[in-house]
Length: 138
Image 1 (cartoon, rainbow, N blue to C red):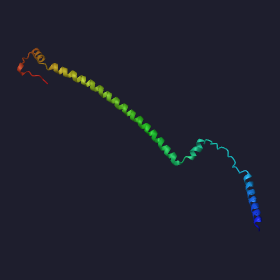
Image 2 (image 1 turned 90 degrees about the vertical axis):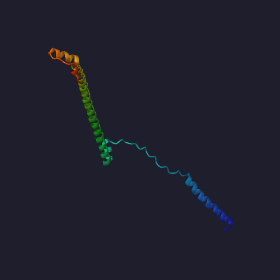
Image 3 (image 1 turned 90 degrees about the horizontal axis):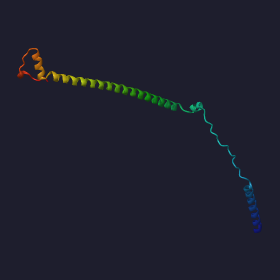
């Protein structure tokens, strides 16, 4: 082949390849079909519970029982505190009454132990008292 023939063959091959490429470029590229949006349907409670594992159910049950137990313990504790406060107030009332009785008895003791009163009672009963022998009772 002559040089000219080689050039012509090369041109033809180039045109063939370029033509094929043009055909491929002219074809529309395949586009993936559009998918509709996924709509999330809420699960019914029964189906939702089926998706929860037994371990999760056990943990939730233990947690609920613990909350109820703590609540009952708090109520019992409040009741105990109220009862103790009631008992304290009753005891305080008794202390006030007893302290009033103690004060009254101390006053009576001081009145009865006065030397003038002792002399007066002795004279009424016809007794003679010597002042030196008279002492104050404590």
